Amino acid sequence: MQYKKNQMSVGLMIQRCHRWRQKRKQYLDQARQTQDEIERERLLQQAEHYGRIVSDEQGKIDTTRGPVKGEQCPISDDDKEDDEDESFPDFLKQL
Image (cartoon, rainbow, N blue to C red):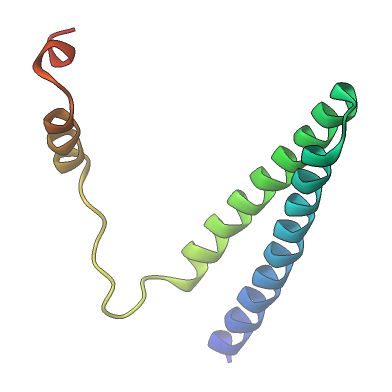
């Protein structure tokens, strides 16, 4: 029974995320079309607000769902640092 309750809860969270993503896209599209710089900034701030909400909610969804079968574990922080160092030229590593 608990599994079904969690599954329903996750479904509702996904629906909310979808609506918020649509709102964010709407604000971004309006910001691209407006000529007024103040209005554009207001719209971009609204879009950023919805982006933060979506990010937080997506984090909740991910923790509620748990790992997906066959999904690889994320790269450890140590491995990431090594990969990042290789992509920079030597003179930047020395800074």
